[in-house]
Image 1 (cartoon, helix red, strand yellow):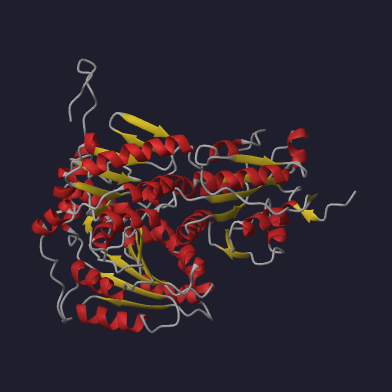
Image 2: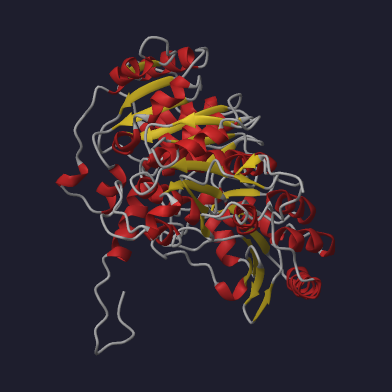
Length: 570
């Protein structure tokens, strides 16, 4: 019988390569050092060392976004793993198949009742897996060499199939143990449709849409994890319906498409968009998520009795649900059965407002957010990505029209401030040739700033606009208080610190329109990271943030339901 020549760590690394991962984000600790040694031996797999585990998790999130695929994070037990939980939770909420890997205690420790460092100081060795089980769809502890391949393969396939994170813990004395060679195999990326349910759902949808007078298409964020972006675009090309995107699905419908109306966001929708969507007699909603944020405090007026809701694995009609119907397969089968109908698009063109005026030539006067984002608009080309942090950048980013091929990244479901800094790192590592423009508020930046040093370390070249307005603007508009004011930093001075002796980061601070134009000209020609601190008045924010914040605050502030009034009041 042949001997085993592959270690568990190497097996895991090879499986990461098999699913297209080329980099993993790591912070070392004594429980994962042997595992890291083994991963470093895997051809085509590079370690990206991060400053802390939370940032590494955010970086893995950004990496998964750029690839629309899997990513990997490697941490140590407890002090490392629990630091990463927030980032993994965000990946769960946002449907990113992140492989969270942790070193674990020696397999003998539990049997010998050992109290361990980095732990809770109790004889409990499984609490980290239990915690991760709430933010992953599979969580396993590897303690046996011959069971390891089964556990690893099952976890990876689950991540890809459900497009959610998984957790793999490998005992520190097992990572170098010998196990099976990784045989060639495929991993199922999606759950396939039941053919009977698929056919019935398609026929039902085609009948309703072809009988409709004013059908529209509403694009939602679940299109991406369902692999349905291209199928949705092909359907739209075929039917001539007008199309709107929900805010966290911006760029998934190309914005230079003839049928694109803009962002549907309830009361803060683009001009003409909400009127057409909400007056449709049938709305084909592909991958929507209706939260308090995406509906502006549940103030959207979409009539759900007129909606065909296409979810990742089912299609919902007002009086019928077809389960185990894969979104991409449904759209592909539906498209040839639909008639062209541009009646709602004609109505939209009749009522839509004129394009928003552009800012003029630069002058020696104070900057405004409008001027800044007009200049950001000019930076975005068809092969660029605009990544925006939670806050006013959400709303200003929504106003930036994107050319076909450009991408937009936002963490709207989870909305963890500080996410963007790590996400920029991961996104840039995945595709260093793509122009990446990030807009980050000063409050958010202070949470995760140190990962800019990792971008410089690995030669990444994003253009980062640090918007300095003295605090948490989005929180100010929801509910103001002294806690929304932060201590000002010498932000540009940090780049000198992060550069050390050999970094190529460049930074400048701008306060006028002319200074911003000069800085952008320098940034677009700089061979390295560009960091532009933009000083903005604290009260200068997007008007939609004011309207949105008021409605979200009202939704948050609803009084408790009375025990005498079970219906309650809003």
